Image (cartoon, rainbow, N blue to C red; front, top):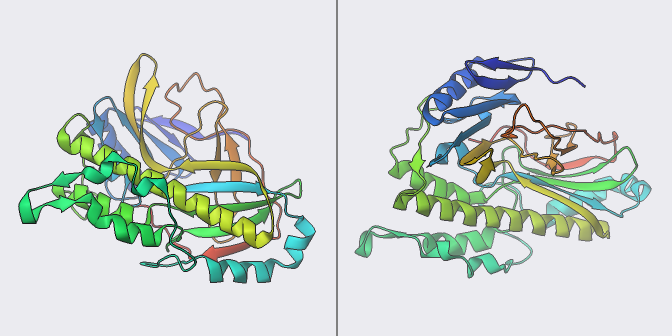
Amino acid sequence: MGICMQIIDNIPVWGASIDEGALKQIKTCYYIFGHAALMADHHKGYGVPIGGVIAHETLVSPSGVGYDIGCGNKAVLTDAPAEDVRKNIAKIMDDVFRTISFGLSRTNRVEVVEDDLFENDDAWQITQGANSAAWRLTSLRDQARAQLGTVGSGNHYVDIFEDELRRIWIGVHFGSRGFGHKIATRFLNRAGAKDDMDSAPVALDADSNEGQDYIAAMKLAGRYAYAGRDWVCQRVAKILGAKIKEEIHNHHNFAWREKHGDKEYWVVRKGATPAFPGQKGFVGGSMGDVSVIIEGVDNPGRPAQLLFNGPRRRPRDGPHGSQGKGGSQNR
């Protein structure tokens, strides 16, 4: 399969169809950060387009990470018999819906999930301001604990599908829920971000106190998102009566410190899946669309490995159940 890519004003842009609004945004990002790319399924976002990737040696962008910090996908391969799942898919998805909480402001209806992240992370010590006006990250802990293991709304979902080898996979897509949204809102507001898609993205000096606080809080929200997807996949596997044989897990709204060439960068991906050589990722479709497993390949022409690429495994037509609601939520 050929990959359609062109260089526009020094920016690699993938895809046969280009969204002009997203292209305008990524050009602004390139002007600020010096390195940028645009993935094939791009569209406009807030400050940074969905499918946009930006990189800078010393700047990190809360606008680039977005409001749903740590949003990502997890796919798990199970040993569930395909014929049994196909036959019982309606009941299985009913059980999923009764077990997993979907929608805004929902809490986990099964249990309060205990996880080490709630106690063992220095980010909880983040305090901004003084005395009675001080804002503390710990003020978000109780709600975060209650929501861990919930999926949310928008294009977030739980999916069950069969691949071309007749193996059953569980796929999920969601992020850090209200916890990450509140962290993002806090730092974006403090930086003077405007609620306008066409405004320039916020850029924080990663070495400043504000930048260090943001990075620590972002990483904690990332841990939270991973823990939530882990719990949901384990619960769905339990509903299937299956064991998990393989796990593929990745963020696509996050900032990573990475070395490319002889330099280190903050690489911010928004709706873009990392795929270094040999690294697997899960790119899930929404509401019945095709989902794929990807694997990064060596790309010497683009050493920054900003894009996802590689061979795909296409699932069969069924069994296919999905719980969630369509629409784009990555901001």
